[in-house]
Image (cartoon, rainbow, N blue to C red; front, side, top):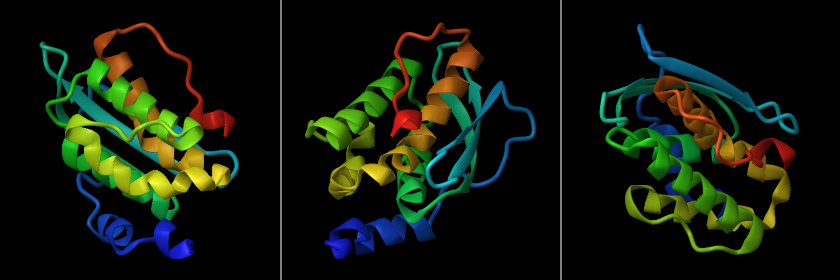
Length: 154
C-alpha cells in the first residue's frame, strides 16, 4: 500500500518542482500550514486584468504528497482563473474525503494522488498548495470568500 502512496510518478513530481521560489513583485501572497504535520507552503501570484494567473511561484516545505500536489499545481496554474483553481481544489477535496472523481482539465494529473484518500492524516498537506493559491488569487482579484476551506480541518 505504501508503494501506491509514494509511487514513482509522485516521487518524480517531487524531484521536479516547477516554479519554486518567490516572485519579486507579486500581486498577492498566501502562506498555509498543515497543523498536523507542519508542512508549509507560501505562494505568490500575479493576476492579469482578465483574472487569470500570469505568473506564479511557490516556496514549498512539505511532505512528498504536499510537494507532489504543489508540483502539479505549479506546472498547470498559469492561465487558470479563480473559478478553475477553486473547482480543482473542491474536486481534490471530494476525491480525498468522499470518493469523488479526480479533478478534470488542466489539473487532471491530481488523479495520481487518489491513494491518499486512505490516509486522512495526509489530506491537509496534499491540499495545502491549492488552499494557498485560492487565497492568493482571491486577494489579488479582490474576490470574496465563497467557499469554506476544509484543508486545515483534516
